[in-house]
Length: 206
Image (cartoon, rainbow, N blue to C red; front, side, top):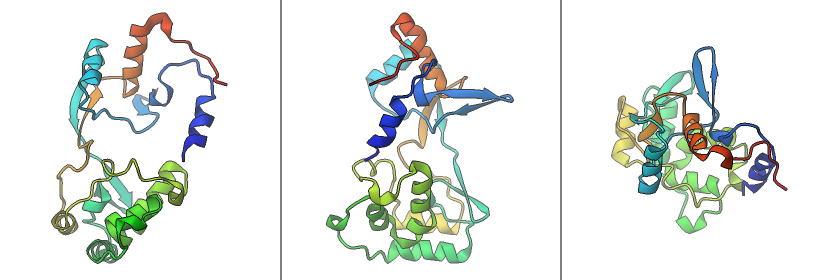
């Protein structure tokens, strides 16, 4: 359901390689154009990264969310410690007393969020974040991509993450690979150097 976005992006011509997996340097800092980390276990991809000398290091994710004037660890659904007490309560009760119904009632991504995490977590973070990140109403998103990207914590983990700072890693990118230098965009540069004249820049698709 995001094909309209992709079509509008791929029709734009560019004189640089890397697409939206590029990085930009400014004032001594490197900024990735999008949120990119490599967390695949695919041997072909990992061998390719070695062959092109992408210079990857293994990292532990250290991501935080700023909301309601405080910082909480990512992912939100397992880390509400530090938020206002009424919000923590709504998130906990929503997770425990979730009355969405059966999975066969899920029609879109917003339904899936309510089904998985309950009303509090959905409305205090997941749905507003989805609108901001995708730029699309969550009722217009499908659900075939979500399970591995949005880990569902156990009830014990949700309670632990409400009572104290929980530094446990959750999800497929808790451990990831990232270039030693040049930001994530260095992977594209390293690949482009190996491809030499086989990359055609400044092109526009029909």
